[in-house]
Image (cartoon, rainbow, N blue to C red; front, side, top):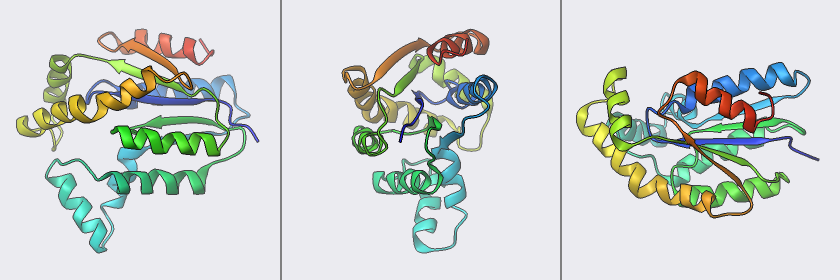
Length: 198
């Protein structure tokens, strides 16, 4: 059993993780059409989850509407269930939106070990707090009011940065610190080189 490559996208809100992950998926499909791609989008999983009608769905939906951070146990449950149902032998894996905390990174590491994944590529789209704030203000999403934007910026510094440091200092991963304050195309070129498809 072997998983081909794993790419984990991580960075501040508004840094373009989803755009670059989608671009990588397109590039991998073109370069290796015979291989499956497993694309884990945690945000998408949560948006689907909160449409449910049970008690847990309702609480999660309330957190989402309040602009809060979902609990670790629920995040791990959603991506774990996704892996169990979707994982395929010899697939390329793209992960966007996980981990958002150090504990999630540690649990995700157990999944990588279980599937025999060697040296996942961590793609950190590095943008400043100010740059992130401007992009979130520009996109005018329902959850992008000023208070929620500042909360997400604070979360990144207190919750996500420890996970990034964990990857940066862990020899089991290939860590790529990419300047995210450039054009989509320039960043895409760097990522294509990391994936050996550029």
